[in-house]
Image (cartoon, rainbow, N blue to C red; front, top):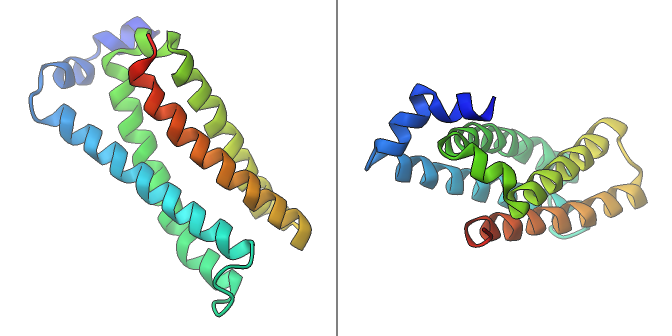
Length: 146
């Protein structure tokens, strides 16, 4: 399946493109930045910072930003992955990043759908901050781990 993905038309196009691959990479980085920033701002509000703004209002305004950024990061990430899926699949930093991403998304879903109490919400926010920072670090290691 990974070999078929690597041999696909979009993957071949990106491998041969001087402009589109770097632009796609920039979109991926921008999307991750928007996602992590919006997640951290929501987490910090849940932890009590920015008390002048109602927590529900902050979450209502930033959640669509985070979801849009997540969709853009996932789509661009899949296209970037398609260029060298066999190498990425064997990269321990890439695997760790994906596991951390799954944990962050599960944590966000639990927070959103279970409507945690104040104490549980704060624990979820602290875990979210730790996970998103760890995802960024793991992502940076992908290019340096063989």
